[in-house]
Image (cartoon, rainbow, N blue to C red; front, side, top):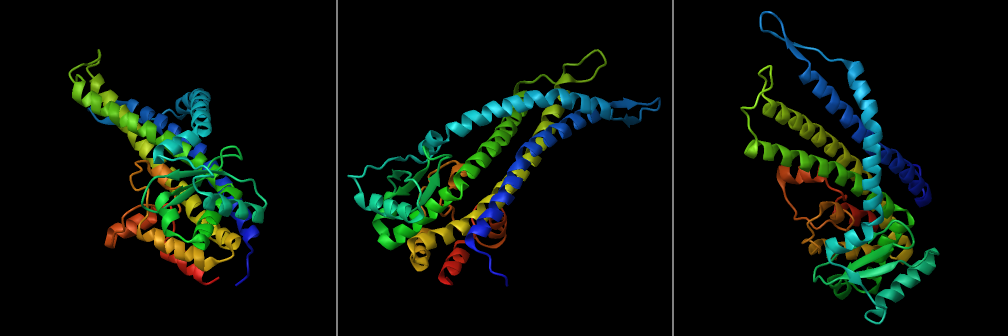
Amino acid sequence: MKYVGIQTQIRRNNMMSILLLLLFPLIILGTIWVFLALLQLFGGVQYDEYGNAIVSTDWNTVNMYFIQTVPWVVLCVGVWFAIAYFSNTSMVRRAVGARPLERRENPRVYNIVENLCMTCNMDMPKINIVDDAQLNAFASGIDKNSYTVTVTTGLLQLLDDEELAGVIGHELTHIRNRDTRLLITSIVFVGIVSTVMTLAVQMIRHVMVFGRYERSDRNGRGQGLSFILILVVAVICSIIAYIFTLMTRFAISRKREYMADAGGAELCGNPLALASALRKISANPGLGQTKREDVAQLFIIHPQKLSSGVQDFVNSLFSTHPDTEKRIQILEQF
């Protein structure tokens, strides 16, 4: 088998990630076109003299409405994306309950981070801590002013210096490879689609509870049912878009975890120490109280309960992280 160096693999992953990231706006625009086409399809139902339904779709009209809608969609998504993108630091910190860690509070962590940063010639990130007896760590941020490594108190207490260096090296590699910037971007896009889908579901629920189905227009067609039909179409399109965006995000996350493991092992100089740390963390992963799945994907090990059988297979398909045992096996083969 041809050997592929770490830097070569990083370049390949970055190129693939850019291509995957471009799918997000395409998915959103594609969903809007499908939504308009379905509206035109259902709205174009006519009846012949025998009462048989005749379905016709005016594609020119669909395309015309799509072209008129695109600028507004791009503007709304752009503003939404900008706000979420630049407020990600406070969003992540609130989601996990983190706080800044002062040097005088734990000089051990600062010494390890500084030594690793000097080894790879990178600027030192901020360090946050979560008061959680369980174990986990993650990196976040989009630039050198916001790059942050967050650890739990349980992690600091249970891991020795070499194991902690391996974990921090893993997170620093995420920052060096621009993984955090990419994942924050994917989180924002998935959040946009998820929010639209949630709003559509809430509107359907509101119409079903408070709507008046007996209302009709001059042709006798129920306006309430027509409105529900529109919302149902919106939900279906949103679900399809959400599945595609989730699959794209997962494809990005899984590959980069392996690269971060390799980079962390290289930085700390002891792959077995990182393997040992992953084994300890997997036995008691912390931050399980975090309600946001999009933030949980940043963790070095996702804090989810293990399952078996069909459920385990389904979870493995949609997991943001590769199997921890596989990661450990690879590290032990270094």
